[in-house]
Image (cartoon, rainbow, N blue to C red):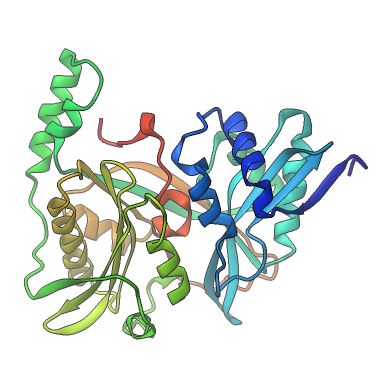
Length: 350
């Protein structure tokens, strides 16, 4: 490493310099949601009882930040039990210091037994294989129009093509959805250990789930400007799981949905509940969710969601501790996707 470069954990005093670096590197205005001061504080400098290590790493040259890698902590089931995992976010390097970005990434790989990457920029997609990431599957992106007229009215100047898209979205917004008779959702301000116990030891074994902590779920609910709402889910009066919805703009996102079942009809019902809650939010024009297993994909299709994109799932697993793991059910909470807001890319169904 060049002797003029300094690799270290970021501290809160680095926040404004980090905001400027990310704005310049990603070519977004300083007021863009993900680099606002309060969002950077929350992502990287708020204390978290479930992850005491630094969540932001930087490389500086002559006092200027030239590379950054953020940590999004995860926990994942393995042959050794539940192990720490992480997803890197806000990973970037100045063009003249491109090697510093790879150095930061390798710094992270030494700190956890497993690293996960879901999607990413075109640059990261090219670089990740050289850093040891191997593909294990895909997380499809699904979306459904909720209020197509509102989306159309707030868009750019109307054209014949825009009107045609509005008609298509309107027709699709009336698609049927699965029944959730007997199911209910109760809003919560914060999750408890009992809420996680309700989804422990899920029978079936066909799908594996990341293992969030109560601290992580409540950290997500506290996202400034993410408009996150938490719910417990019940069926027939029995607690079945939980749901988190976010809405940083006009798009509601299924940040996390987990129930104590691997039966397709139960998952279809749970997504039907999520869709109804999105309808109740008068600022929601579209709802989206990831589907990385057949269980989720079928449930989303049963509720009129369209597959609109796909994200490659990659892992670094040098110890092969996940080799016998069933397909991973990933949600927006796996990354910064549940709160990332770029106005020019707000909707999938345009």
